[in-house]
Image (tube, rainbow, N blue to C red):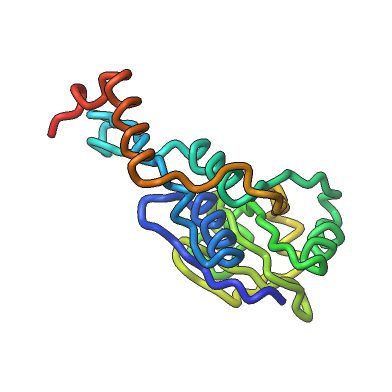
Length: 194
């Protein structure tokens, strides 16, 4: 059983928070993933009910994870009737496994057996009649899901891979310079209402 504690940053989704949780577990930090995340996009109107929004493009954060931590995720092809085999292989190798599930099959959710939505979890180990997992939204750990519910609700499986860092962490001066240069080139600062 992997001893991973869930971690989340408000405003990020379950996939992003799962990635952060795994990075933090491995390196006891995650901040370099956001080293140039001033690269936000601003929308004055992003829907009738939402109003204004700031968001950090996920691709930038994932690319930073690759550069600065050597971290990557890969989809795993699996037999829908037997996802346990590939999950067990990864867990036994000491690697956390990210899964996407239909929460219709997640007994700890209000919509269990009522309605469908998709959510991302991290599997941390095998238990007697199923699997132990953690949830980053809201923060929950030591959740157990049966083999039957896992088979019924699983959408995808992603494995974590660790490689070499391809770049050194930039200095704060490099980050600010790069961000301001990009913002000026795109006229983003002028578009924002301060």
